Length: 115
Length: 110
Image (cartoon, rainbow over all chains, first blue to last red; front, side, top):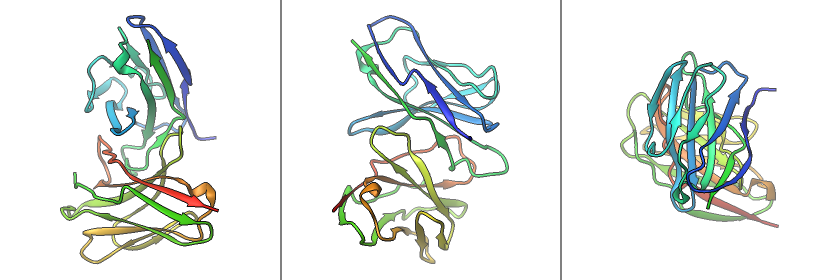
C-alpha cells in the first residue's frame, strides 16, 4: 500500500530535549516536505527536499533541521524544542518529475507537545 | 503563486449538493487548480486537479470557467463523512511549495 508513515504519532517532551520525528514513504517520490499546522494559521511549510541530499527552507524553518540521506526517509529534527513548537506536524511526498507535485501524499501527523 | 480566496465556512445537509467556490484572479497561464480535503487530526488528501473546463472523478467535480479566475468544487449528495476542511491551491504542476490558505470548513448536518 502506497503510504507516508510518521513516528511517533504523539509525543510529549520537555524544553531543550532533542527529538526526531521520522517520515518514510514507499512510493519512490523525489519530493518530500514537512509542514506544521496550528489553529488559525493553517498549514505552513517548514523544510522541503527535492531529492537525496537536496533540502531547502520553507516558510518557518527556525528551530528545525532536516536531512535526506535516503530517498524514502526525511526526518525532522528539533535540536532544542521550545513550547512554541507545540503543534501538529505533517510529512508529505510527491513526484517532482513526470507528474504533478501538487498531488502530495500526506502522513497521518505527529502531535507534539513541548512543556 | 496565485492568491486564493474561498469562504471560511459552509453548512449543508446530507444528500445535498455542495459547491465551494475559490477565487484566483491572478492565476498564471501555466497554473493548475488543485483541491485538498482534510478531516480533523488527519493529513490533507488530494481530491482533484484541473486546468480548464470540467474535471470529474469518483469524489468530486471541478468546474473552471473560460477566464480561469475562479473555480468551483462540487460535491454531489454529501454525507456526514464529507465534513472536513477543503483547500483550494493554485500553481504550476511542478513546485517546491504548497501554500495552504485557511480553507473552507464544510459542516454536514443530518
